[in-house]
Length: 338
Image 1 (spheres, rainbow, N blue to C red):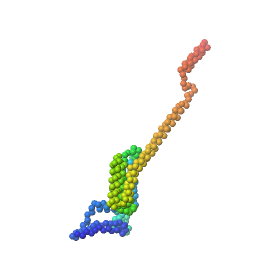
Image 2: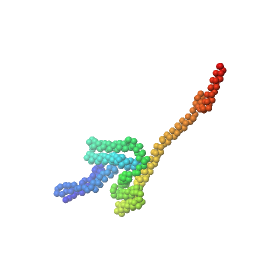
Image 3: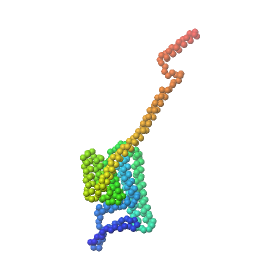
Image 4: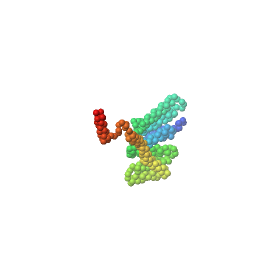
């Protein structure tokens, strides 16, 4: 039995590396070699990295994903809203990858201008546009629909305890993006092996710092940091990374966890305090206006003057004297007439 090894070919127009499956010939029959699960995962990883390297829109989508995750933690969104935003942006990324694949196939089968090829590319680009519009609509409904801004402000003012699971997932996604992007920019190593930053060291210190910020026990936090140091040392002893690369991974994880567990809550407290002061100002001004109006009304009541024909206050003695005087005047008038 003779097996033909895998061969690589480069397309003359696109420069895309294509891979031909290994062929085994046995008794005049040709069969394909079965690929294991790891090789399939490796090829899928290469496809994602190719899109990230060659497509500017793909990089923009990943940066948007990172910004949305950070803003969700800052605004203290619940898991349902976060899942909706992540799903919408992931749909855009998937549509962009299908668009890239269709463009590569069209460029492979055509060498000159063809209106059908143009139609295929336009339809694929239209799918990306629809997915992007769906993401925008989802964001508008989450942040502006049904008084969502007031609800978000209330959640920020109430200062809910952050969800540790949500923070760990967001931290792992952001850390993976940062490590892979740094390796692509520096053109060193592979996404999961080698490179300018040690991913294993970064993940170890991310989990260790999470335990440090969330656990109330100093011994447990010390043991977690010690395990992270052992993970970093194992990468150095295996010859995969240098000490500098391991230290860079640890520093990146420490900065990221400090941002998620310390900086974001502080910014949230400052924002909630400012909004509370803004909300209290109208109430204070309303109270001051009411007090000023009551003072003016009291002053006006004290300055009211009764007419001259109607004395403001008549004592009982004055009334009795006036009554006796009128009686004497009537008696004297009757005597004069008599």
